[in-house]
Image: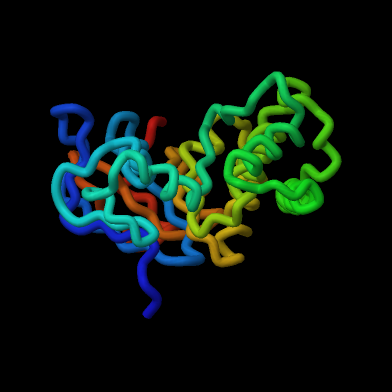
Length: 235
């Protein structure tokens, strides 16, 4: 059995003095598509933030890509985050730069220097999300779905083994949201571990994966991706 990329055992996740999730047990491996569901404030985004060191682990054993999160020093957080691709609901693109400039900024910030390699990798990432002809555009010239595709391209630039996506379809219409989930599903089928927070239960049926529900300070795995009874949503 392959070693888990994410391993949590009896983990408490807190925001300041408030314990959001208690005794979290989680073991996720390469090639999985994983959903975190639950009401607003139930802890799904907090769990995601804990994975990239935005929230501290107060108790338990937490390991992401071999990094022990309870013992990880702040100065080493960038080492972990460079191995993760993070996709935000609000895209967080630099509006005063073109799509290509947004991607090049990330590559150069993570140590890429050869312009030919940079250009090739940007083309590969944009092609992966169907945006290969939009590199010259500015983000404000794109639709919400196109901006989210660019955000995913940015997240996969360094070929991270894990993609974390926080409500990636939350600001999109249904058809566009399904197109974005198809991209994320394709990444998981290619061997990437993809973790998605969502309140859209329709996605769970159309793009099956492992489903975990945050409720009453606990994380519980559902028996199957198609079984949505008992999953808390915003609706």
